Image (cartoon, rainbow, N blue to C red; front, top):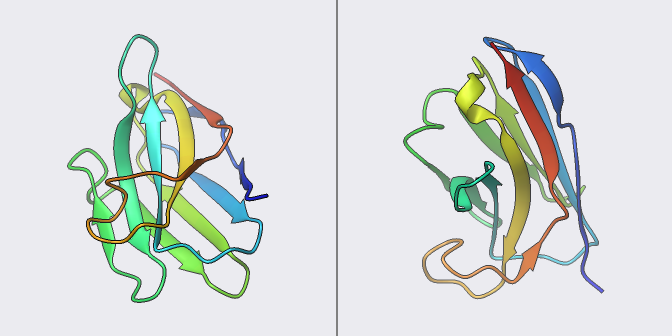
Length: 120
């Protein structure tokens, strides 16, 4: 059974940094990435990376502040988030895409989520 296990969330002051990790059960995916959902809002894309070529994709809100990376041997994806803002507060979900095409347009697996809280 495929599992995505996230870690690295927490409470940080505005301007601080966090690094989220997502470890998979060993299966290779077409692409993996991160989404987030704030209270009362829809889940939104943050960043993605293709597994083979390592192409990366970012939401406008993440561009310049976040870096997504992966280690194929460790089956792990990271999201480094810098200069965090209170509006970044949300539950962050790891996502995996098996299907190809537009990366992360269709999600096959979700992680359980990790809370990120940014205080002002």
